[in-house]
Image (cartoon, rainbow, N blue to C red):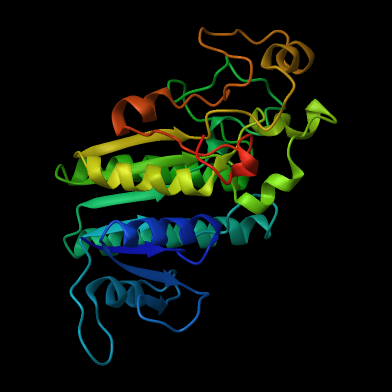
Length: 287
């Protein structure tokens, strides 16, 4: 396929672009940042006309075909990086702009970055149970998370309008590269990482999840939690939960260090099979 990846210069985006290209796809990276090269186009994604041009292949010189699928990763990527109103304006407008443009151009496969934050991060209000999953309604606790919740609602409604449209929202955990593993584990204070239940996602496994979602591409909207299969801690889960969330109900399947952001749905429906862990050669080797 010819696939447009917005935000392909970002931390997760670089892994996604590399994996899709390695898989034989023709990938164009649409981003504000990046070096001049084949497969990169500098685009202000809040400019709807520019997005239409980029997705349709409009540019000087050789005219490439329009894209077959969209992977949307571009955003202000976390709470607190910009004033709330700018986070809301940028992220809502960007997502609507790229979704609307893709649909207008006939693209019917969209995969995009939702966020673990919709699960209730930073869990100042305890989660309803652990491991948390996709079964309970979103609990946004920041403007950033509110936008991600609105994007999921928008995606579901767009699929209702267009019954042949497939939109997959991947609720990515905190993205890590191999060099980030030098700071692991975070055992000094369990409260330091309780904000996302001590979870993370290796960027390479995040890219795998994107590829699996593109391959599935069934009509309708689905959201999936995407995390690595373990925690950032060597402290056992039982000890962490006893100290930080003693009254939160615990469901079956909690191992000594297994992730408390359930990836069961992604394993079952996407075939997601994470390969990398900070515990194995600081992430250099497959887990």
